[in-house]
Image 1 (cartoon, each protein chain N blue to C red):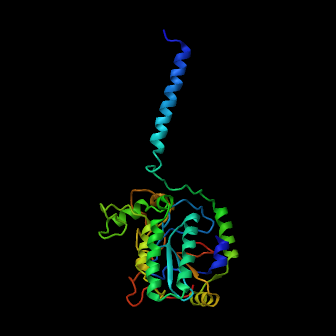
Image 2: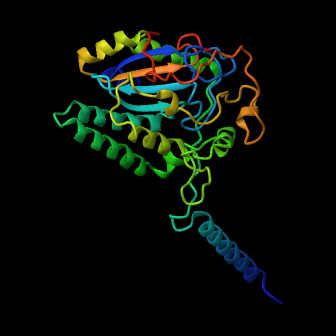
Image 3: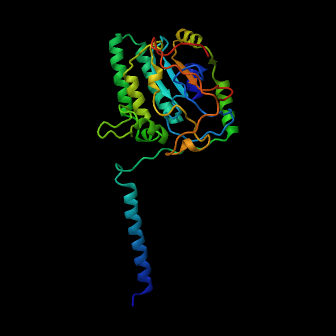
Length: 92
Length: 218
C-alpha cells in the first residue's frame, strides 16, 4: 500500500511537471511565441466626446488646405493634414 | 499626442465625403459614439492622415485608424524625414534616402506593431480577389501581409512626391469601400458581406487622370 503522503507528493510533482511542460509549450523559447494584437479598451461615447473636444481645443486646426500649407511654409513645420468621411466636430 | 501635433506640426482637416472618388462609406456616427477596438489601417478610405513637408512633398500617409503607440512611432519617423527633406542634400540623394528610410522603418517595426496592423476579414477577402495585391506574401501568395508594411512600401515608391502629384486614391486602395466597425456587427466578422450604408452613396468618377489628388479647402 502506498502511503498517502507519497501520493500527495507524487501528485504535486506530476502537477509541477505538467505545468512546466505546458508553460514551455505556451511560451516556447521566445522566438516561436505568436504575438497577438493588443487589446485597446473600448471607450464610451461620453469619453469619446470629451477626447474629441480636447483635440479640437488643444490644436489650432485649419480648414483650408492652401492656408494650412502657407502657414506650414511660413513656420517651417510639416503639415498634418487629416482627411475624413465626416466632420471632426460633428461626426458623420 | 496633442502636444506633439501642436509643437511640431501645422494641423488641418477636411471632409472628403462625396468630394473624392476614393472616399469610403460608413453608417452615420455622432461624435459621442462608442469607440471600438480595431487594427491599424482599418477604414483607410474613410480616414487619411497625410504628413506634408513645408515645401509640399508628401512624407507619409497613414490611412485609417492607428493606435497611439503605432502612430507615435510613425510620427517620430516622419519628423526625421522632415529633417531629411529640409537638408542641403541633392534631390536625388534625398529621394534615395527617403526610399531606404521607409523600407528600413518597415523592416524594423516591432512584431507587436505588425500584429496590430492585420487586415480584417472583409478587407482580406477583397485583397484575395486582387491578383497582384501587395498584401500577398511573395513566397506563397497568401494574403497575410499587414498595412504597416504595405504602406511604407507604397510610400517608398513615391519618393518625396509633391502633394499635387500624389495619387492618394491608389495609396489608400485596399480593402472594402464600406467600413463600419461594429455599426451593426456584420463588418466586424471574418465572414459575410458588409451591409449597405444607410445614406445615398456619394458620386464617384474614378481617379483624376490629370494629377491625382486635387487641392481644395475644407
